[in-house]
Picture 1 (cartoon, rainbow, N blue to C red):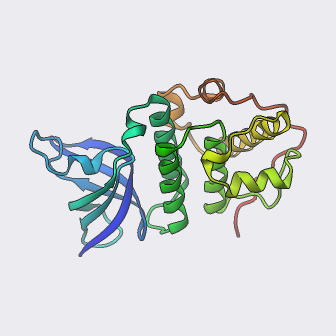
Picture 2 (cartoon, rainbow, N blue to C red; picture 1 turned 45 degrees about the horizontal axis):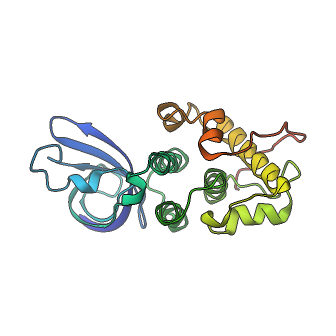
Length: 237
């Protein structure tokens, strides 16, 4: 069958002599893996459709919805040029894409997750990155994936918790000491969740040296304060 779907490139890998395998998060089919034949040749016509965090409409041929499909064409919606020209933005974008790849199952559609990733990339393209981008995206993805917390933890106020889950990413530019402390606690919530859920570390943290200290330095994020409450990860029923 042949179908068309909007997708965002999460990950790419060279395959054989001239092909690429690409992981997409699509609007109607969720996370899928597809092959783009011949893109590594000098005259490869589909190469732009395989670049990281490209947003496009893909035409895909697959014998069934759950096997590796082949991209036969497409139309680019956005390549996010500002992100590609700035190392900080590019690093954050690849981090968000890896989180989507690691925290979402194959072939389980979720328009909420698709729009979440598109929203954060768009704000990263047109807005100014701030220290809240990473924890806000992670908390929202946790909620969309069924791992959200029923109530704020670590004495984070409900108002701050709501802002981290609902406000525009680029508006979460905190300067008050109390807000910065709450932001540090949100980073701690995300760190504990990822340490518990993931079986191996995120590659973007390793490849781009975004460990807990350097990520804080990159984004000028305060270091997390010692936790005074045990964090409980509450999976969805």
